[in-house]
Length: 120
Image 1 (spheres, rainbow, N blue to C red):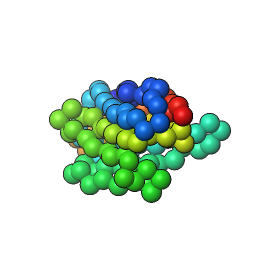
Image 2: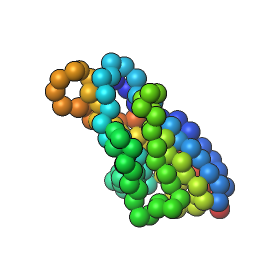
Image 3: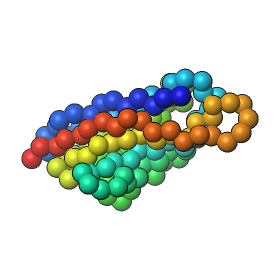
């Protein structure tokens, strides 16, 4: 199983980006999916979570600007980021709990990270 994130890039203050993260491999189901971000020299911070049924929560720091969603048919989670500012510059990582078999507990996977840079 792999998670492949995409959609990062360079954007000006006030701009928008949409990150995507696709899970591939032998997948029998995906439980919660998350987006984290990591500032240089800092630990990864959880910024958004979505359950299998679509219940979503976002961190206070991005509330009202970022939206997490998912497409279960495509094994994909999205992060829509609006009104970006330079303080959002970070590497963004997707994370998911994936069932690789019909029985047992899900395994946690990380995507490779995608750089988001917001210029002033």
